[in-house]
Length: 254
Image (cartoon, rainbow, N blue to C red; front, side, top):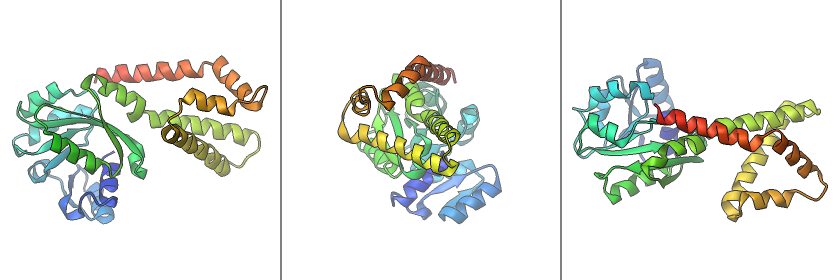
């Protein structure tokens, strides 16, 4: 996720390579980032913490406490800290960093790799409006950003952060069906993926309810309504809802 965000920020010109620094455990990872992006790298987390005006914590949730304890004394008072870990609340983060620290919770998603990401953010009371706007401008390099109240951050995880996996499964299933009916696999993936891309764009650009757009495709006694009937019979909606509720519950417990 960190790599996708860095690529988007740099390719959109939101930050110069010399103004970005990243740390990682493995030297091979750092070499790859230097070669690809031209950024500064180090194996010392404290060096990054001292360098950054905006510090993104792109590590697994289980390592957060360890990393924060390592870097908190190196973080400058005016640094904006951005956490992308699910389940780590502003209160929990503030307890580790200190009450006066400027902290934003963020949940991005992997379409940031193609600059079509969606991120929810929730700043604490120490973050000024101009700092929030500055962060949104930086993040516009890899997609869209919306402010949400903290009690919805775990919902953002299920509806946006994790949902690309559900969409990829849907695309794969559609392609499998097309292959079963004789279409070459590479072509099947293109047809299925473009259908998802175009449908999503219709929702965003027309402003119409998804149900209305679905009805536009469903001719009386036609092929589409027959497919929809089977999806309803097999419980597609319920399966998606239950999966997302499980995702949200898991995020809240992390």
